[in-house]
Length: 491
Image (tube, rainbow, N blue to C red; front, side, top):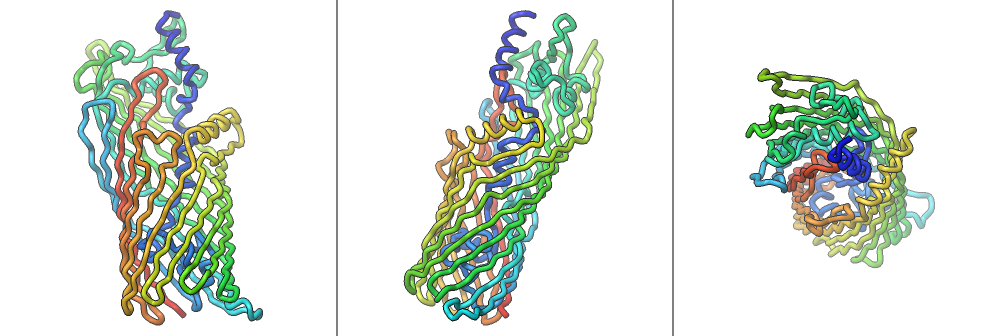
């Protein structure tokens, strides 16, 4: 084995953590299913989800179930939601222009019933029961990454082939079957067309389309003791439905790689599952004006199942003749468990008679405490959980909102500031911002609420990881605009 091969192998073993196959479960999966927006009703969305200390809204069944007890009449609500996504991406390690993209979708943000009842105990003013669902996370999005830079995804595949992972069915083995590899028969070492042009600059593009969400079916019971103390207990059954389609394309537009012309690598992933959690909340009325509230959520214990597949087309020239190789993986299936972190929140609200309110709430979650559980491959489980504990961190989400009442009309606004959930936040803002506005109209037995919520997030994305070749890093600025309309009836 020559010096070049020895150097590569040393780097591969030293950075083996970078080479876990893409089909493996990792910190991105843990974060996806543990980071929530709590869309709820339009009233809640308009005040940035800050109703935890005040309650009296169906959406608090998923945040602070004690607030259900403030409702003196039964209630039915339904909230459709329109989602508009816009984004800008730019490859950092090259002279590349920004790429813009948009996507839109419709979904149901909340649907629920609250039953208000009295108690035989005179100290308990009422005991209420609520059931329904709130959308906790929305995955509808389409993103395009494009740029010119050094390196190729084939570098990753050759590293995998020359490591302990060898030729797997979804990445390196697929590349080998499509003709992306050559083998040195003297050493059994795999190499590729890119080894002959290590500094070549090629064009790359990836389109990622995702859909689905996390919808929580919730049940809660809440009691109002002497109009002073509210206590609520909630049970949640979140359902996961996630669909991801990735199409990655490379092309040697400047003819810098002798044999390579272009390649396309497609990945398909569907994740489904169900979880269970419990929530305990309290609200204390200090006086007619001031309310304080707090809530604690247990981890959500998910049982998840991934179904995935990959395929590749590889175009190259040999002896002056063009060739196209293709390969498809078998259908993969993997079942695993995820325990999300504990969540804690607390806040204070101020009610100004019949004129409106101001409310603030702080939520804390340590995302590094996510835990993946595999039925086998314990070494992979250890690697994935170590990455989660090292790469993720605790995060706070500050939510402040208010409402002004004028006759039957309600004017609302709010702001949310959320810390990025990563241990290394270099290049990211201190907080991601979410702004919201809303308008409501309330009658004795009927109300209608409208809200617009805009969130702005900066992300870093890597289409693939390698140990010894230039890293591909895209900066991604995303903007989500959500329009929610709640129709409610009191009875």
